[in-house]
Length: 322
Length: 267
Ligand SMILES: Nc1ncnc2c1ncn2[C@@H]1O[C@H](COP(=O)(O)OP(=O)(O)OP(=O)(O)O)[C@@H](O)[C@H]1O
Ligand SMILES: [Mg+2]
Image (cartoon, rainbow over all chains, first blue to last red):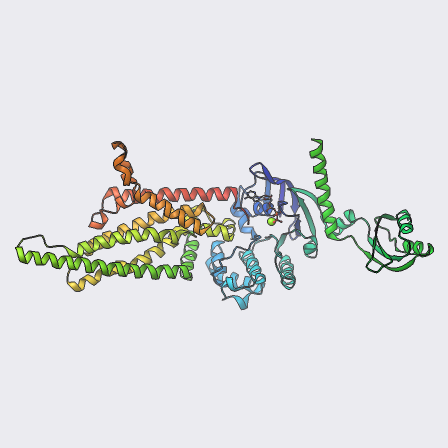
């Protein structure tokens, strides 16, 4: 459905997108992930035909965004970072306007508007001015305008940013509904926010793709081992000597716990090993009191930070070499 | 109509947005009130002058120099209205494109099957219909003079035709200003700036070398209104009122092309 190859967008000498390539198959739900300024919005805007790339290829359903913008536009529904709404208009008349603008044939307009209203749970607010709606409802109107002309592909730029937790859940549910019969690309800078909704993630940093894979595969590949936290009573120096030397423990940090005399040890385990039994046995055998132990999988956020950090460090190294 | 694709939808939306906007209602109310006051004062003034003239005629028995009160009223009222329009049009046009950029709705237009000419035309058309609506009651004021048994209907018709043409020119210029700004207030003040330049550009004409004088005078908007207000429609003026808006609509089109090419900065 989407084919992007060596996409470049420069603003002056500064490249917002710098050689991005990826593909999205029909029916897939893909997340574009990256920190602020990574180039997610720029990539998405190019895909919607809102602006041309400086270089490279961007195709939607086999149509080039520059050569055949109308073919692209008729297939793409776009929700920008800021939903494009006219605050003074009522929801239904706004959607009617969008239907006309998108070239929906006159006889289908009413039906399309009503169907978008009901799919986005907006029927009760249909005759309210948009400026009176809450942020979550505005986002739904934004989604409604994106699906109005029945596009195959939905491009949603940070659809849940700035919403409260309940609204996030609602909008996420809505996107999951829409994903049933649309190809969806959505962006975020928080992996956990989209990991539930997407099958695959393309991670972008500083205009370049740094990883592209399923969420599970990413955590397997970059996740490393678990994080284990152990609380122990006893001599800190002895702990400092013992814990890092245990097989399977990659890294250990020992800090004083809130309880006096108890030490909290944050351990990183080697990949694919459960170090808990070994740690427990070692601690007890050495005569410490084991107070507690918890295990946590490496969070998606950490994976993400690692990925983007790696790139930054590489870049720094290059800068220094130059 | 592929050239103007999307224009009609944009025009209707724009027009509709004026009629739900408190600013537009306030503007309408102030404009009509001010026009009413001007008309009544002007009518009063020339009626008094007319009576004086009549009295002199009676006294001295002079012939043929009775004051044409309706023509005087038409002339003064049209002049005032032209000046008022210079202050009204930038307010009507200020948000046309700058607000689309600020609100992010430009993205909606850019990702719809809409041409730049369509956007330009739709915006112009919506605002222009609103302007004509604004001008309708002042046009009807003249029928007050029918009660006095004497009117200059023809002068009013050509005069308001001139006003309509002139406001199209002003609108085109301020639409262009709106296309290169991202803030309505800036757009309004810059719009005043541009209109004032084209209003007063002929003031220093006498100081220029004579070969430039005609050209500079030709550029001035109000120079082309003078004939309309005395009931004369000249090719020279019509020419100006075609080329002036055409030039600014072309600039607007170019600004839209550049927006489409570079993209609006996402805020
Ligand atoms: N119109 C513009 N002119 C100049 N630079 C721009 C413009 N739009 C974006 N940029 C720059 O391009 C880079 C990428 O921006 P982009 O908006 O694509 O990032 P993003 O990944 O969407 O970030 P965010 O998470 O903040 O939305 C940024 O450095 C930004 O400052
Ligand atoms: Mg963005």
